[in-house]
Image 1 (cartoon, rainbow, N blue to C red):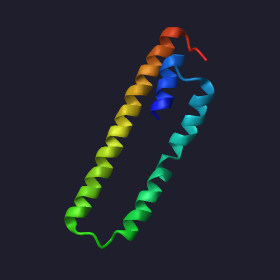
Image 2: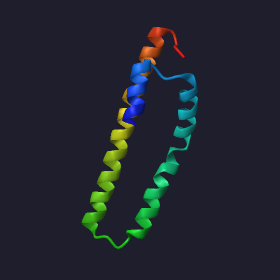
Image 3: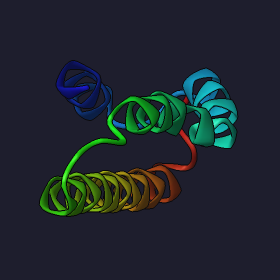
Image 4: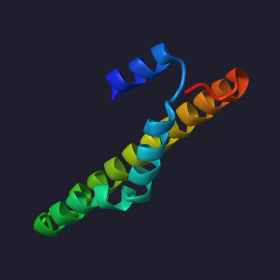
Length: 87
């Protein structure tokens, strides 16, 4: 992910093809949580403290990821508007 970020920063924007592909992946974002749900099924014997830590880590990690993605998207959209939609 850091390599992708670095590449996009050097390029100066998000190419249209990458934007189309990432749009499709974002529609399927719920599937990324499927492995976590399966893991929870197998971890059902954990204590309450373990569950709270697991829930907190999942929520905080998801919120941080979404926030970072939103900030990067806003930055790239602002840059694309200023440059006239560079490919």
